[in-house]
Image 1 (tube, rainbow, N blue to C red):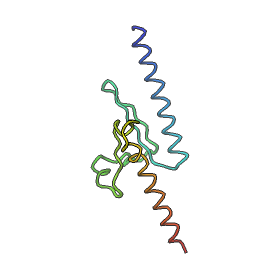
Image 2 (image 1 turned 90 degrees about the horizontal axis):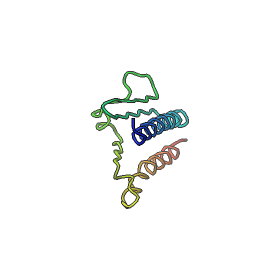
Image 3 (image 1 turned 30 degrees about the vertical axis):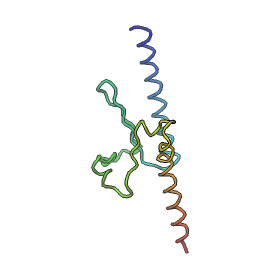
Image 4 (image 1 turned 180 degrees about the vertical axis):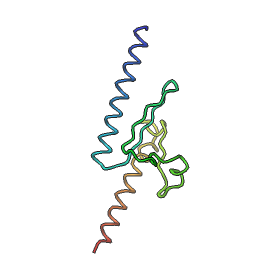
Length: 107
């Protein structure tokens, strides 16, 4: 195997491992259900934070959920796209507003 190919393979393996570890940390620390699917060369690598048969939900279930899902694409992480930051922050802002509303309803 040429050095460049070997280096790319090692880089993928390291990054995949780090991403899986970060996904696990996020799920554990934030008590979130999380699913991560990676496909490379027709092989799938999956992380699921829960072992329930219903997890992860199907694409149809996600699209029909409420509140509506936030669907991010590579262009949403483009630093030169002014709408990117707004779209990335939108779910957090909505969550914070909902939390404020719910806490104001407590007796």
